Image (cartoon, rainbow, N blue to C red; front, top):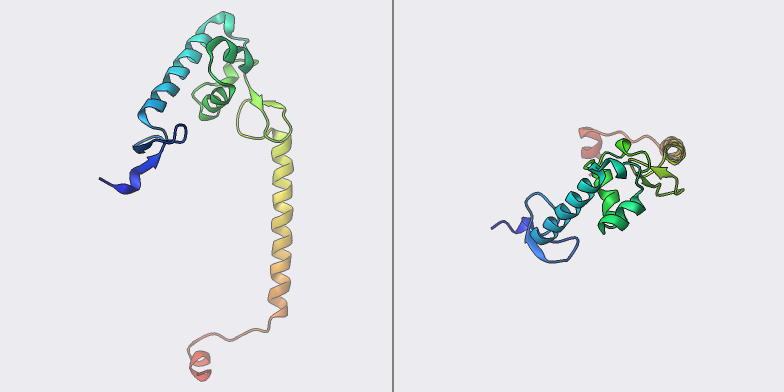
Length: 143
């Protein structure tokens, strides 16, 4: 048995042999049952306009698990106008990723600014250091 595949279930903590999922067989079955309940609920035309809170109340499936289903692409939130979850930064209702477009753009701008400042800092440090010759003769002469 390959000990690299022995993992603890991320839900219950039990040790299991990891093949395709981060969950033990029992927790995986529970997740699949939750998905089936949600899927059946959303197939009903009357429930097409439901929010995550309404689906949670009707099915007993947690909003966290519902969010996971949407993020994993198992539930296509664009098919359901009111089905979405909160942006991790501002709380605006979104249907994919972790951040809304505005927060993502702000984040990208901040990252680019930091990367640009690091490049400037690196180039300043390189200019201040005297150029060292590298190569065989330099190493041999320094001994």
